Image (tube, rainbow, N blue to C red):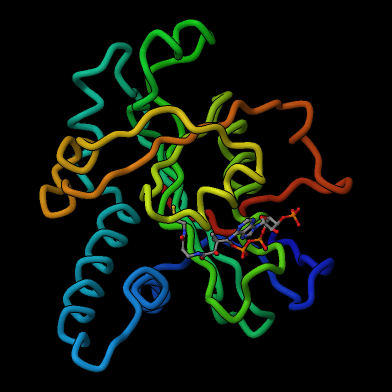
Length: 230
Ligand SMILES: CC(C)(COP(=O)(O)OP(=O)(O)OC[C@H]1O[C@@H](n2cnc3c(N)ncnc32)[C@H](O)[C@@H]1OP(=O)(O)O)[C@@H](O)C(=O)NCCC(=O)NCCS
């Protein structure tokens, strides 16, 4: 069951991503992260194709890199988990999206152990809201859903990477209670994306409180599509 969010200007619904819309979601992601330019369209098409491949690989659980990396960590990630979350208008058109998967957590091992946390944790990525619909609570609703899912998956921390130059997103995540950990210049290299390894990334994380997230306005968000991997 999806849940309508009515406390913002635009009425939107949170739901799982569906197989037939991966191309459209890749377009949304490309438009947000690699905006179109007159002479830039070829590069944008390449980016779009790469994002479609990434989405398909994650969606159908063929993205071998995560389990491969995870197996070198102790304790290993025994169960692969992934969710593609979408905010859409009532006509079904996606206006925002994000991905969540369990991955090796790049927070300092000492910090993790000090907090009693395991070395793998839910990793939020590709959070994107179409420009026209920003500042209406859509990004926040998607992050909150990720937090609820993380708790359902048995975790008490969620983490993400953000480009050091993306001050808007850093402020947004801080507003939602995320803390900054360390810069991680090797992250993309470690997950096999050497093409992106030059990007300077900040790790942010948030400790989750299951008591705060168990119910939202009296109704828990529920999964509506059992065909998705989880
Ligand atoms: C970052 C992004 C997802 C935020 O989505 P959004 O739907 O506009 O954010 P929301 O409306 O849910 O904002 C939630 C809170 O964060 C605050 N916020 C949002 N953008 C902010 C910004 N740029 N600076 C400071 N605070 C911000 C809002 O004021 C709101 O605060 P409130 O809860 O006190 O009212 C969106 O701007 C986006 O898609 N950016 C481009 C892609 C991107 O950078 N993604 C992150 C990659 S790691």
